[in-house]
Image 1: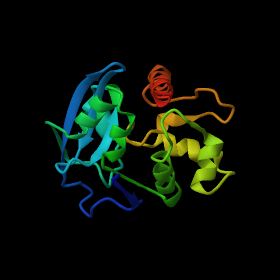
Image 2: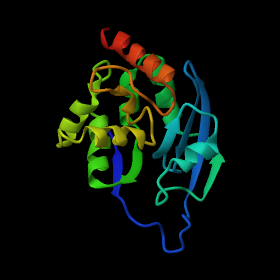
Image 3: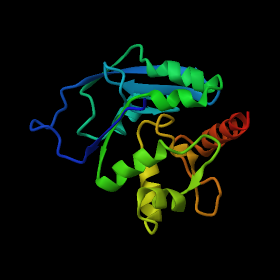
Image 4: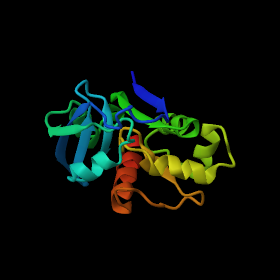
Length: 186
């Protein structure tokens, strides 16, 4: 069962400083180092192909950003290993948490429903979110997605079907899409 906790945008805590802690876990993948930042309960706040924990932490919405991030073991790492070993569905069961406006919340939910090997275009994503004219906003949903891989924004292409950008680099996006297309045929 997929667990996606999405929060409407709201102000940070009254003190302005989050009181939560989180763990970071960096692992090697065929696409380079992959870091996960997760709550103690395993819920992923951010992830991406980088070893720079501070840069990854900065991507988390202020209202969810932990005050302290320490290195540790994160259960979602098992799903990443399984994904790279060929179990594309392994990432679907990882709990994630994000905060944003209503359109983004619906967009992040829609991203989790894109089947591996069957990418959508930004226009199709906008349609899935419920506003076919909001193509640029759909692109913004992808750009502001913090738990990459677990919320597979890499599965969205430009409206003309070409690759487009990706926070972690077009080479990583191409690799992920190629892997998924190959394994989805099996």
